[in-house]
Length: 306
Image 1: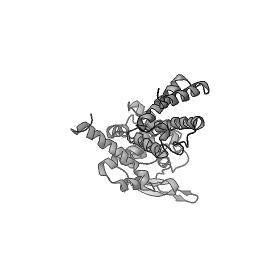
Image 2: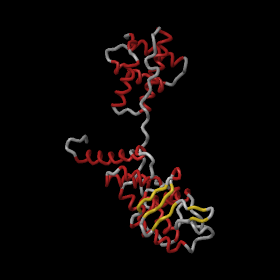
Image 3: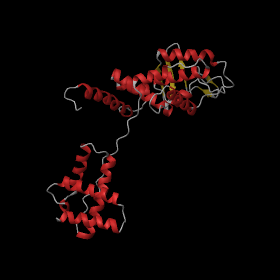
Image 4: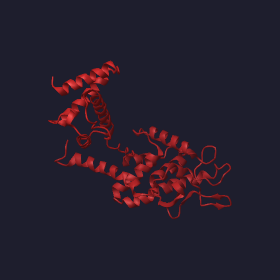
């Protein structure tokens, strides 16, 4: 047994006897330390520096290992070197101060175009709730609204004492006026299917109003619909169509953004329609677009990995 193997055996015995770790955990530590030895190559463990460890972390990241896995391995290595410092007079712990790459933000989930169209275009029964649902879902996907923005829409712009509309749909111009985060106002186009669904809803909406005449969308009780009720209705509607996703209103916003970007490539236009103050907030959708391109490439290019 060489010196490095002796170090590993002694360290694992300390973990077993003093910390009473399970065999499964000990095996994980051993795998992590063997990977360190492999990365070190001909350089001995006691000769590694912080520069080496940083390079190893970068190599693991470039090789496709996720940030959580790299962080765990760095933690295993750090503990091993702390033990070496105490037992074998090592000069310094080369892992101290080395951090794993930042965890990438998960990409927003978007429906495929076919599922999105099927979801919002399904009419269902010709009842008030079904008409309201279709108008709401079409508008969410047509204009990329936040669900809170949808719920706050009025039938028309209202400027009464003590009341100011947060948003409304201009049926003549085919656009929706929205007040978003930070009270920022924007105007977004509304597609023809959404306008038609809104016309169907508006034809019966007045008969359901109970007290407040302003809200565009109403609950069964005739009051302004809540964000939670919109979420529940959309989820139930998706399940009734066997769409294999946990569909929520923000997913329709993501779908709107990614589908418009895939078709147009105009990131700035998508930023404006979503109401993002910074282009950086919109650039996440370029990742969604790249996923689409990568999938097509992998399926079709003769030199792609199968």
